[in-house]
Length: 264
Image 1 (cartoon, rainbow, N blue to C red):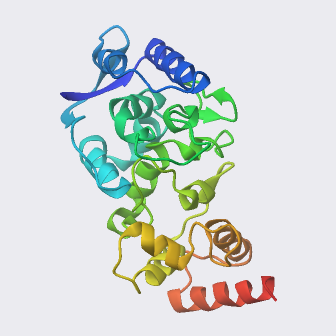
Image 2: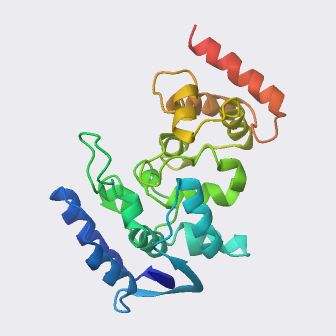
């Protein structure tokens, strides 16, 4: 299904939330015909721009998905990105609806205890609350919002582009724990140096993303350089130094020193 890029009106957001919450609470899938009708319904949508995207585009990983979306959504005037894109909940939820089949848990994923539909993967939420249209990114707690299927991946892609290939390498329907940890609360913790450190470790291997992630243990909650711990180390450096202005060799040395200190 091809269409120009749209965004939900407040009524469209409410209707989409109704479908999402029903699917989550009843442990079922989103009904494809309902969602496809909703994303094209002039009663619930308005035009965002005239670029065309295709819901039948199949993405091998989240990086290719976000790059494809970014080509249609990101505009030349970066000063407008915050309001027109990253705080435009109608747009971000419309994109999640448009690509709902690739964000939902697929039939061949046999993980137990994982819902087909989880609300915070589709809706912009702060805790259990759906964020109001007037609220801006960075003004409310973002721990749950950082699990949205589009929002923060697009945000980080806009800043780091191709450098994010490893960080966003997972399947489109799998939430990236590292991305969730990087933007929690109201704080963006990613720096060029941290991104280079992650990519440098990943570059030792030529395997696919899932196997590389296992080898460098980025998803591990206990490994010293797992998602949770590496973000804690980055926060320590950020509190004492200016990581964006540090030379990478100095940053890497300090990160390793801190990791040894915390794990001694």
